[in-house]
Length: 210
Image 1: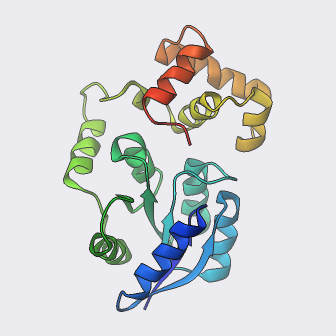
Image 2: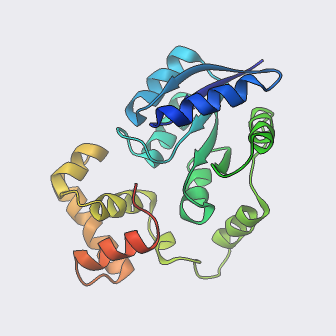
């Protein structure tokens, strides 16, 4: 039996996933959570084989959650299930330790295949995502400018785009405001932003805001 933990902040989505998964032979939901800060503890309590993880949840930032899971629960296979298109988060998610990435527009049969694939130790990626991964490893320039950023810089940029101040971002990422300021300066340099309005516009135009 494949044990699945569902992590999504929308109750309707969680209920829908539980009902869909209940129809899968050999798969059961053993727990759920609606907060990124509770995912680590939920994995400890429920001992899932597969974690269905949403990108956008309150609490701990998404990429930070992946890094902690990789360290504390390396046996849990993470399938990211998100509303965001692959071009926005998938490559970073896989590099951070996810075993697969699936958008919420797919049908239940695709979800079943993805769960079984990642549980078996393989990756679940679409052909388009495989191409993006290949390009990210090569000498070609990135498809989008924000791929130049490190994961931490990317997280800080998204939080700045949401209107958060340096102190708030520091609280979210366990960083000092001074360190956040350093990341902010790097982001502005790499992305060639003239002011915060440029950053907010870019994150909105590229669907990066949670």
